[in-house]
Image 1 (cartoon, rainbow, N blue to C red):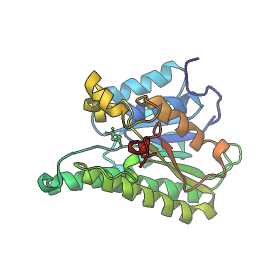
Image 2: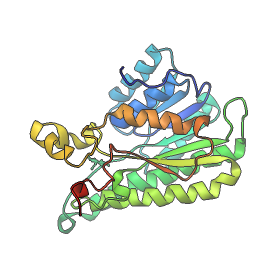
Image 3: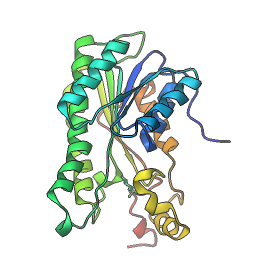
Image 4: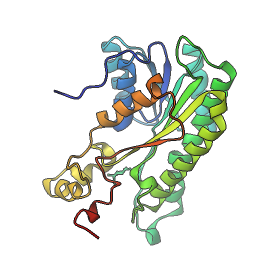
Length: 273
Ligand code: BGC
């Protein structure tokens, strides 16, 4: 049986914003949230045509979507994006902090610019978008017809929030930061009926890591790190996101869901220690 996103409209009438939604995991999440009944802002920084394609895909299936350009690391652009969303749909119910990038280099060769850009987009971007969403959740409060809580924030992290990653110190540091950003926001916002959780994907087939699975040799090497012996698909993450955004996970906040085929299970130890 093919694994498809749930077609239950568990998010009917809710308004979602997905950052970095023009490709990869973000595009898949945007489509899955729409299938679940949400209206979706498809945020992008570059590639307006790809964002528009995601919007058209959602509309063709009978959903509502809106592409909005914004660099999530820029406060003015984030504020303008939320203002545009509120003008169109009044408010927000679900934020998915997905935008992220890699700029890989060994530590001794890494430029300050590449360190800073990855921290700016992967970590500061999540702070800026979460702050804007939380302000609106607090202002508006719970709308019982839509959800049991005033809002949901889902932070895209990575298995590299716990697995150190040589040659990617900026990326791993940003994801370690996302983990503590998420937990601290969850603690602070829980009394206000706002849930904050993270998803930590393992190796998922997207443009960010094409080199790791494109050739049979590369894929064979990668599979040694994945006990389930399957490279993940964006839909694996999208299904988890829909669940974390829905009332089905109402008692879960401050949690990180590792969707990684077992990558965090120390696969090198499968023959003993
Ligand atoms: C990275 C991918 C990598 C995966 C597992 C992700 O967070 O973006 O490039 O394949 O972690 O190492």
